[in-house]
Amino acid sequence: MDKATQTMIDNLHKNTGKSLEQWVEIVKSQKFTKHGEMVKFLKEQYEFTHGFANLVAHKVNESDAGSAKNQNELIINQYQGKEHFKPIYEKLISEIQSFGEDFEIAPKNSYVSVRRKKQFATLNPATKTRFEIGINLKGQEPQGKLEPEKPNAMCSHKIILTDIKDIDKEVIEWMRKAYDNAG
Image 1 (cartoon, rainbow, N blue to C red):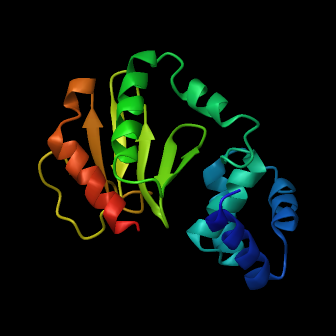
Image 2: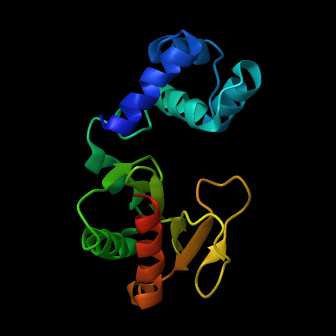
Image 3: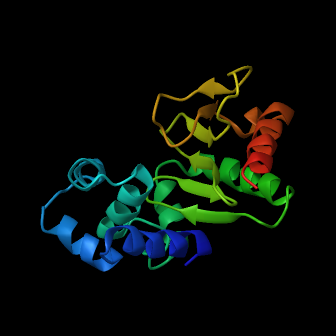
């Protein structure tokens, strides 16, 4: 488990007086089936921040990187039926590795979170025809390939790719800026 997640778990207990395991049981007792229902429940009923609610919901669903038996399995599943996007993912990871070594790759069920002290990008084979890079650059005006994301999304912006050739200097510069801002 990474340090940031462990700190969140420690702070959850410190702030609420209940352990992560106790919160998981509380949420499981509600019989929710959707991640969003769990997050909403914790935010409305217990005044959780989004981050804490999201952490608990992922633990309930065992959909976070720390709960996955095999993190590679999460990535393999993301690309089933979208295998043509795997080279895009691999090229993006390679580019991020050229920025430095102080980042973490955290696969989730449907995307991969990339973070330093905080998440700076998500890599997501969104559909069979669209690969999305989520970029965190709060306050940045959308321009070029950098599009605004909907309000309250995990990332402030997105870049849509359809082919590996779409990964150009501009895409890499936006990812680099987000990486630098997350340190």
